[in-house]
Length: 214
Ligand SMILES: [Zn+2]
Image 1 (cartoon, protein in one colour):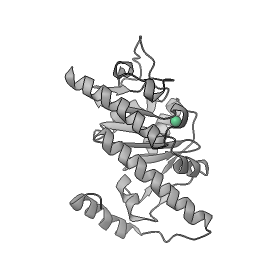
Image 2 (image 1 turned 45 degrees about the horizontal axis):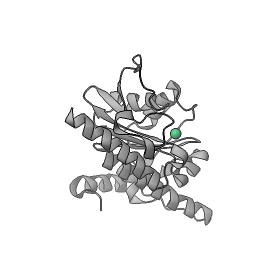
Image 3 (image 1 turned 45 degrees about the vertical axis):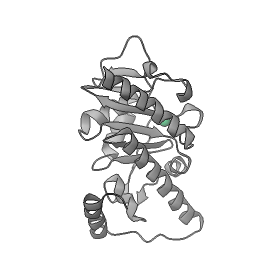
Image 4 (image 1 turned 135 degrees about the vertical axis):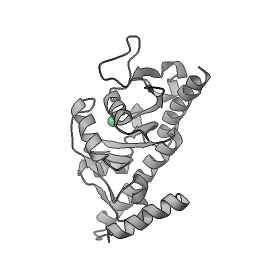
């Protein structure tokens, strides 16, 4: 019970931090973490600053089961789908951070123009195909784009990042935003980025494995 309380508080704190970073204008985005065989997820339509730990919704990962006394974020389907498909995902943040959202509107993936693209787990950060928010179709598109990755862009929408902790998931979402900002700056300057090849990105992945982020 104590652990559940701690996680509820951490979900709210992550939402507030997301807003402070400018990643969640007007209460956009959502946050969740795994707990036992279910998840804790931010409620819909409540500003993070007004969300109390007890407002965070506990729900099963089974799409058929909905809580009767609370309304989870409209995006609960992709959160549940990620936890079911990715055993290493214990926390998920979904942001509408400005530069990554802008890039997502061009439906562009972020190529390996900078080695830290590898932090998301592969040689690029894919842009998941568009589907209406809150739908199973969007959840299916997200899972496809997440293959071998810990972060994706959502077409005409925003970002999803996951990790072993809420802090790591939010840090990865911040990396994605920062990469999108730099990639957009290059494109706006009319410069053609040099893309790191697969062999180099493999070495980058090995270095991340050995040293962590640097
Ligand atoms: Zn959203």
